Length: 193
Image (cartoon, rainbow, N blue to C red; front, side, top):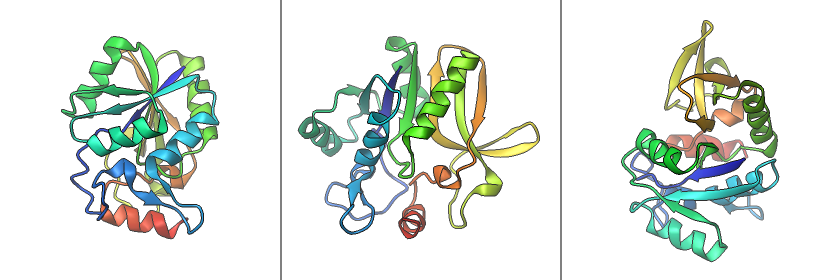
C-alpha cells in the first residue's frame, strides 16, 4: 500500500506568517522538537505499514516542492483544482492508496495502520472520521457528514479506491480531528502540544 501526502493546496484560509507561505512548511511543536507539518506526517507514514509514499504538489506550492527535493521525497504533480479533482487524477495512476492531508499534526502510525486494516477487511474506500462530539473547542471542522445517526468530522486520512462504495472508519482520538485549515486551528493545535 502506498500513501499520497496531499500538500498542494493554496493555504488561502490560513494567515500564518511564514517565509514559505505554504501550509505544509509551517513549523509546529515545542522548542527543541519543532518540525514542519509535512515532516510530522512523513515521520508517521515511515513508521507505519505503508510501503512507499509520494507528496502530491501543485503549481501553488513551489517552496514545498523545493523542500521535498532537499529531503529527497518522491513527488507527484496534480492540477491543484481542488481535493476531488486531484484525487480523481491520482486514481488514474494509482487504483488504491492512502491519502493523507499534510496538515494533521497529531497523526500517528497507529492511525495509518488502523485505516489500512479496515481497508483490508472491507476492500472499498475508507473515510477516516472522528465524532463531532469529540472535536476540541476552538477547532472548526472543514467537512462533516452523518453516518448511523452520528455527525462525523472527516479527519484527512482516507483509503481511496476506484470503488463507488465507501465506509467511515471512526477514530476515537480527538486530536486526529485537528486539521490546520485556519489561523485559529493552528493556535488551538499549538496549545495542545
